[in-house]
Length: 158
Image (cartoon, rainbow, N blue to C red):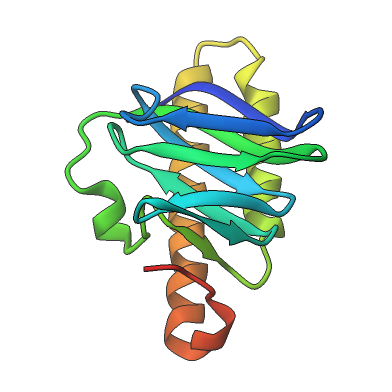
């Protein structure tokens, strides 16, 4: 089950951001960059263009920044229990930026997740679990299709 702790759509950090979590945030994190930023990869900051996703596993270092201007992103902190190699089975990279050609389907689901996150109801937690699971499966399908059919569309760093 996927349990969402917090989620945001088109979140703006005025004046930039400097995230340094060497042991992660204590949970899983999905970030979608809506602006250019710098991400720590193999011990050094690398420039990453807007439109990239980063999926951090629990305990994985989360280090990224935008020292000037506004930092805009979508993000979701969550748990997966049981994990059972969830992202490995989906073929999604973790800890490195990756891009899909058209992110609208995924960001639309993030927007819907944020709306549902603030609702109440007997099925609320299950709805969030199902929506998040659908989002990750859809992200995997798009990523795998583009990786297999148009490698140049998948700009990743591993």
